[in-house]
Image (cartoon, rainbow, N blue to C red):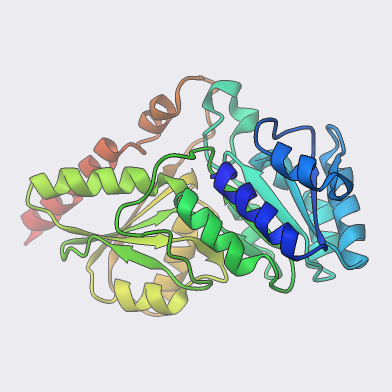
Length: 311
């Protein structure tokens, strides 16, 4: 997503001189186009994420629209107090870009996992949180939101090749996207792991189980109307996220079910326990936490079988 995201950012920066980009010594082979085109609007602060947010806050106060860029946990957790006390409390137009949201930095160890970033930011009502599903949507989401009031968090994937079928990059702030309109189960997916939800749908179809996939690309403000309207037509809902099941998408959907008195049952597919330090490929770690398409389909089939037995 980062290539499409920054190509779009360069286009926008040609149109608006307020756009400024900061990085915490990250983004080689990703940020060069911006840095070379706008050297006076680019700054590498070094490994100093708190200072980067502080500088961005000052730039925003001075009228710029600064974008900060580094790995997701270092974008959010290390400078969390700075994000809260600066851009959020003062409603400044700081754009925080976290790359590798989820466990995309799987071989670099658990300190590089972005599995609690949404949870800690979602408690702050003053920040928009965006989680594009593929590189096409990353571009359209940026185009739709770069100039909105207040701070924004963009949770991006490193995947610059895969696209979600039928979505065609569509994005609308505060709305969800729906594909694969099946009647048996609703799968609600967050961000780039939507690809695994699509795989699960394809597997389930082979077993006569037909799914609807709802893609939540805007966690805050959440697409409550779309979620309530769609969930009201299903008895069984599954959330899929490369994030802890507490604080992220699963918590959001649970809250909506309770607050709107919906009667559907729900299963959360996400990270349930603290990672144990084992490293490997992203697919290996996904499988370990039950997040591959195959494991998600297995959970759904078992749940549907149990429902059928009770009937």
